[in-house]
View 1: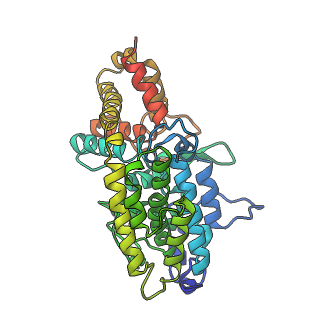
View 2 (view 1 turned 120 degrees about the vertical axis):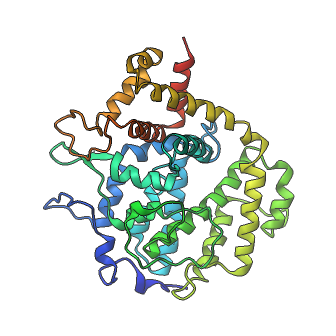
View 3 (view 1 turned 90 degrees about the vertical axis):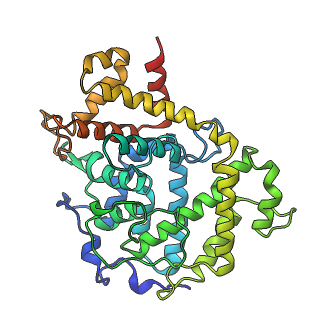
Length: 393
C-alpha cells in the first residue's frame, strides 16, 4: 500500500541508521560536497571500472550482435528503475535502492551464470570454496575495485554497510514471498552461501525482488525477439492469462508485477505478491528455465564457455611456477595479469597504492584466488580475445 513502509525507511529516524551508513574506514570529505552517504556510494560505483565492464558481460545471450538484446549493464539499469518505482511508492529511500541496484551484479563473471558455474568448479577444486557472484560482488567493492582520492592515491571503494549488504544479499533466484529484512548487524564476510541471510534493510529487500521482476520480464522479450520462443508462445499466453491478440512486452509484464507487489506489501506481510500473481511468477520462472535457460540454443554454448575460462585459468595457474614460459604462450594476457596483481600483492607496489594488500604471493592458493578474481572481472569479449591469442600462432 502507498507509504506502507515509510516508518522503516533508511533515514536518520531508523534505529539501524548508524549501522547502515557505517564504512569500514573513514572516507575523505570535501567542504563543498552536497551528496548524502548513499549518493556518494552511487557515484563511486558508476565511476568504477567494474561497473563499466558490465556493458560487455552476458545477461542471458552472450556477445549479442543485435543491439536490442539485453546485456548485464542494461539489466542493472532495469533493476534500478523497478526498485525506484517500488521504493518511492512504499515510502522507502530511493537513494539507497539506486546504489544497491546499480552495484548488485558488479561481481558477475563473463558469460553469465554459466561462467559463474565454471569458476565455482575451479574454485572448489583448487581453493576449497565456492564462487558465487553475490559474494564476489562484495569482494569486488571491498577488496578489488579502487578509486583515486583527490590526491591521486588508489583507495578501496569503501561503501556503506547498507549498500555492501544489498550486494551480497540480493539473490533473486529464490522462490520466496513475504520478504522482510533481518535485524542482525552481522559481519558480511561471514556469508557462506547465497541467500543465507535476508537483507538488512527494506531497500535491500526491494532490490532483491526487483532483480527477479527484471529478469523474468526482459529475458522473455529478448527470447521472443531472437525467435527462441516461437513454438512456445501459446503456453506463454496461458501463463500470463492473455488473449492471443494482446501484445506481450516488457512494459506490460513488469508493470503488472510492480503494481501487484506495491498493493499487497506492508510491514506485517513484508514484500508480498498476491497469491494469484505469485502462482503466475512461479509458472513463469519454470517456463523461463525450461524454454530459455535450458534451451538447446543456449546449452550449445556451455562447452565453449568452459573451454575459454579453463584455458585462461590453466595458463595463469601455470605461471605461478613458470611465469616466463607462460608469458611466451600469451604475452598480452600475462602482462595484463601482472599489472593487475601488482596492485594487491605483498611485494613492492606503486607509492600511490593505498588500497589493502590481499595476496601473499608465497601462498599458492592465494595466487589461484587472484586468478579467479581476475577472470571474474573480464568481459565476454576480452575473455574470448585472450583465448584466441592463447591458441593462435
